Length: 506
View (spheres, rainbow, N blue to C red):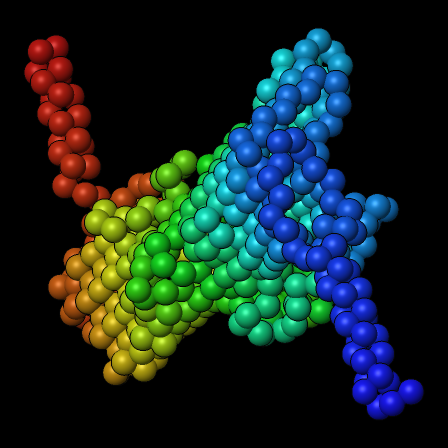
C-alpha cells in the first residue's frame, strides 16, 4: 500500500474518533430545560439550567419538594441555574399533622447550584390543631453548594402552631469557608425575602456561610418566640467572619433579632457608604468561656431601629470570672439609632472616626457595660450610664448630649483632648432623700469641676424609683439634694389647709 493509502486510512480513523466525541458531547451538552412541575435532578442534568413555567402545586396529604438534589439519587452534579416561578402550598385540617414544604433542596452528595433566581412562594395554610408538621423550608443546602442568589423574590410562611419557617438554611457545604476571607460563601444580590411563622422563624440560618447580601430580608414571628433574620452559628473553624452588606439593604425582624451571632470570635459587618443599610430589630451576641466574642460594624451608613417595640436591645455577656465577654465595635462611617438603644452586659468600642448618633428625642443607654470612645463622636439627646457601667474617652473624641444620666458607682474618664458638650447632668442613687450628699469626684475624678462648668451647675439627683431632687452644688464638687419647688408648694399647701381648718374650729 502506498503512503497515500495509509494516510487516507489514518484520516478516516481520526474522523471516526472525532465523530464519537462530538456525538458524546452533543448527548451531554448543557441545556435549558423548562419545567411544568416539580423536579428531581439526576446525573444527566450536569451543567443544565432550569426554568419553572409558573408552576403551582398544592397538597393536603404529602410533603412537597420543589427542586431537589438528593444524595441518594445524584452525586457530584452541578446545575448551572434555577429560575422562573414556583408556588407550593400545603393545607391541613382537623387533628391530622400538616405536611411540610422543601422548596429548593440540596441534601448530601456534594451537589451544586451555581445561580438561583426567580419568584418563589411557599405557603403552609392549615387549620389543623396538631402540634406537629407544617414547617416550610424555602432553600436548604446540606453537604452541597449554592454560590449565587440574585434577582430573587422568596416568600415563606406557615400558620401551623408548631411549624418552623426558614428562608435559607445553610447547614454545611463547599462554600470555601475560611477565616477572614472577604469572598467566601454565598453572594446575594437584588434579593427580596420574607419569612413568617408561629414557631422558629429564621431568614438565613447558617449566615456565617454567606459572603455578601444586597436586598431586603424581613422575618416575622410571635412575641417571645425564636425569631432571627440573620443567624450566625458556631461553625467549627470559623472564628473570624466577614459579612458584607451593600447598597440599599435592610435586615428586619418583627418581634425578634435582626442579628443573632454565635460565631466563636469576631463577626465583621462591613457596610457601604454608597448606600444605606438598615437593621430593624434587636441584636444579640452569644458568649463563650475564655474568649471575647464580638460584632463589628465597619464603614457603612447603618441605621438601627426596632419598629416592633420602639426600643433596640443590644444584648451580650459580661462574665469576667470565666473570661466570657462580648463586644460591640463601631468603626468608620456612621451609625444612627432611630429608636432608643440599650446596650446590656457588654463591652462597647467606638473608634475609627465613626459618628454614633440618635434620632431626635432618642437616647443611648449602657447597662453593666464598659464604653471606650477614641477619636470618634457620640451625638444623642440622652446618654445613660447605668449600674456597673463605665465610660473612657480618649483621643480627639467628641460627646455632644442633651442630658447625661450617671448612676452611682460609674466611673467616667476624660482626657484633655476630648470635647464634651452636656446641657444637664442627672446623678442616680439607689436611695435618696432631702439632705443626701454625693461627691461627684467619685464619678468624674479630676474633671468634676470642668463637668459642672459645662452644665452650668444644671444638676439633679434621682433614685431608682423615679423620685427627683434639685441640688445645691458646692465649690468642691459635692451636691446636696433639696426638694423641688413643686415639693415645697405641696408642703405649703398642706400647711395652709391645716391652718385654715384650725381657724374655722376656733
